[in-house]
Figure: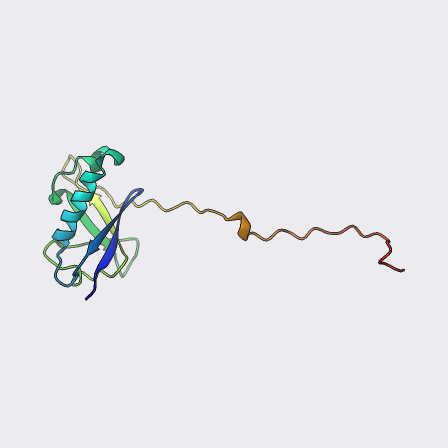
Length: 136
């Protein structure tokens, strides 16, 4: 199996995590890569994400196949392939709060951008008048 990458999302942040061998790489291994990425990006993150120190503080989930608004937690001991991850899979990241509970899944949706070049202009009506080109 060839390598795959996954888009791990939390709020407005997206981390791209590569798996060289999804059939043998575990979810825990992906969390370790993500932890390094979080620590390297600490100055650009909110306080909760910047203070994560352990993979035990990270929960990865994927949208449920039954209801895409619900998320199913990925189990640390399973491989990426056994967890059903596919290339370019979106994975939700949630963090453990100070109270010991998990924050809810929150993934910001990108704002819709209208490309003005793609909009068709309304045709302007030409004034109807007599001219050299018109004979009545």
